[in-house]
Image 1 (cartoon, rainbow, N blue to C red):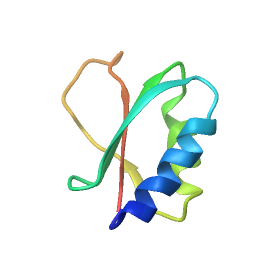
Image 2: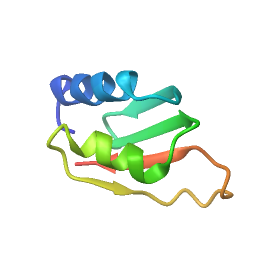
Image 3: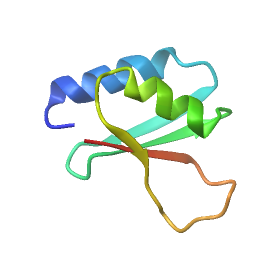
Length: 72
């Protein structure tokens, strides 16, 4: 993510995604943190539909932590 347009695209797809309770987009860190009843892989696939490169990022938290994905 390099601009507010990218952030808007990510927000649009996550807002429409079933099970997402909340999310935080960090443009500077190029990270998105998603909370809700969702599968991590589904979040990754949904965000990748924006055309951005996506991957999981390690936060060093327990397995029940929020889903986290980084976009470039």
